[in-house]
Image (cartoon, rainbow, N blue to C red; front, top):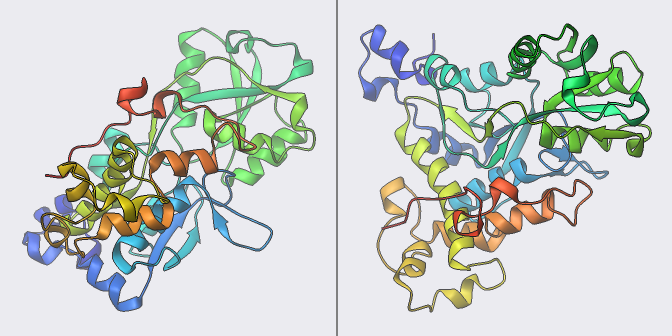
Length: 338
């Protein structure tokens, strides 16, 4: 077994020191000149290719932000599309450096797989989509329904819990690939499509007649989605966490892609620290001190990323909701740089 990809728990069991188990991911990334980012196989608004084959989306922009922090180049990323079933193995094995792919943070995943979740870039919850002509207005009317979903996800357990709690029989129709689920639902092989609500709005755009389908009001679970890295490399974990925190802090402080250079002259100490004008916070994680300024200049702040990928003016049309800043009625909150 490759020592570089061992989780800390596994390393401890084998008697390896933390230094031995720790993978120098930043050094490896710098040596190859790019980050290998695990993404979905195609989820509009989050990680998807356009007509030119260019990857776009909220999860993609997070990888671009990491590349900007390290290389001052948001394009220094290579993308590996992964199914739900294969995503964790790809990260554990070192095939990808970071997983930024609509993945729910759960206790089991955070403690038993040798992985670390770095933050919540999108607060979500599982929902249901049905055809309008089914005449259903609530998930509580789905007794006896056939339900399409992905294998290897939290959705199957959530569905089982929900239908059991409400004493409703159902039939599960599961597929490995997300597009297989969409195609099966679109072809009428099931009555209901269930996944994270954000995913429903995204996948709805792929249906033959999107306007003939509706997302039901019930949200049946908590699905905090965010980037994941291997355990055993605290430096890489810290870089991943603080790139996310910098995006959120930048929005709170009013620093945008358009004004980042001007804001370097701000008298606000928090802005000075964020942009590397004061302190040596980049050095503490192995980066240049203007790492966050690079991120914001190339990809913007968290709000800018949200709005251009999934916000109200995009085809998905999602409001900020829980993903608004804590000061704006949401729960997006980041520790300070100080």
